Length: 261
Image (cartoon, rainbow, N blue to C red; front, side, top):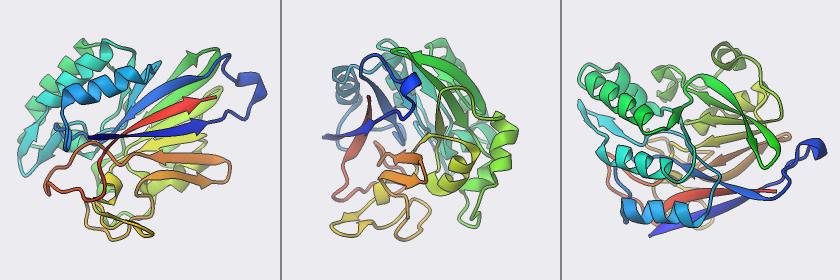
């Protein structure tokens, strides 16, 4: 089964509100296989949500220990691109695949196929969009791989500015795979950050939440759900798959739907 998590987004700027409500689907952490379900079910769930666009926040592929897999990820992207525009960024697995010795060629083939399917890659770039009369600046961040290491505790907003420039017009949405640096994203100027990476904490317990992240960090702060930093907010998806440890407890695969009002 796939859990459908709806989040209502209310736009504070009266001059930039949509003329009618709309939805955006958010994918995270497929890792080339939908946990407890299948690709057909995922595509059908997205289609039934009638989104104006799909945002992928990374780790659709699997790349670790010199092995990589991207066939299911590519099949999913091709199908979704036939429904509506798809905007995607790299997560740590795509970055590892792109920069590693063993999978770099496979990544180049994958990237070419993704672009050929019509998917728009948003790695370290921004694009101004219009949804139902509402101006949105969509930005995608791909930091260096070192930012996924446990020893990296913070990110300077200047790094984001070097890669993306200043925030754009309208409502600023940032696709950033790792939620750990939410405060930096907010300081840069993101109104809404969309993240994943932590798989919902892998094992979830009532009253506690997620227990462990994929980097074996205990009780991750931004495991799943909605978080605030001043007026900025971040929504973290629990993700759709697993990789090294094929385990999710009390934590089904999750598809996030943003309902913008």
